[in-house]
Image 1: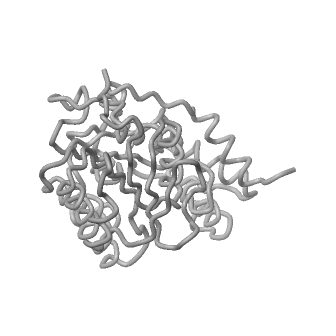
Image 2: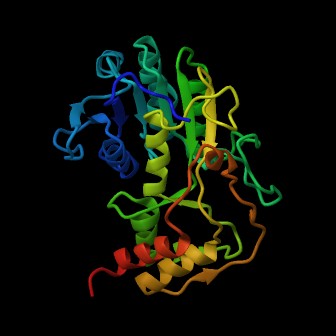
Length: 308
């Protein structure tokens, strides 16, 4: 069962539309017949796709946020400045993302879909499998997981709109800004310290195209709301949902990267988290990842080796 939007071409606002996830979400929305308002900070950087309108501005600005959400049926937020100073991460995530959420609620937008992260969960070595009810990280966990945790909490306080917190683990997929396909492999190639890893530690992952498909299905109402989070986003509530693909370990990922960039891995020994990120809720909503580990790592390898 799916919702039936009154508008046959729903209008969806996407922040960070020029990023790895944002650009893929725009494409997935277009495939589903949506009209997209692609929010970017630099002119000329939004995806050039039919049905995509570039909107240049800063979504934490209340005036811009109020303007860009008018007449929209959903908002998707993908922006978080990972790696920047803590103050900036808080400004954009914890303080800025609720600005556009509140603007969307005030404008009568039906759904707000936020790209969170599975890094908000405590994955200490003695913790087993993790699902949406699991404990979150403490304040000592680091700037990124803590600010993402606090952004989720801030969005939970925004009333008057159905909110969905999509929590992916490592996102595989090609792109200049891809942490796992581009930036992390470059570090492994150039820095001996980055070649160390715990081979038996769980490597939780999802392909960016599968992640974008879930986000687009939620944003366009293909996944109906429900009173039970196990069946769909809770109408008017704030529902987290994990989006992880099949099992893998650091040996799988790190071995593929080191082989592709031509260096030797360093396998360390020590306590490690060996559980899994449970995606039963997303599966119950109808989500089925299409990219398996072999395909994802082959794509990674091809991108790192380049044309032969």
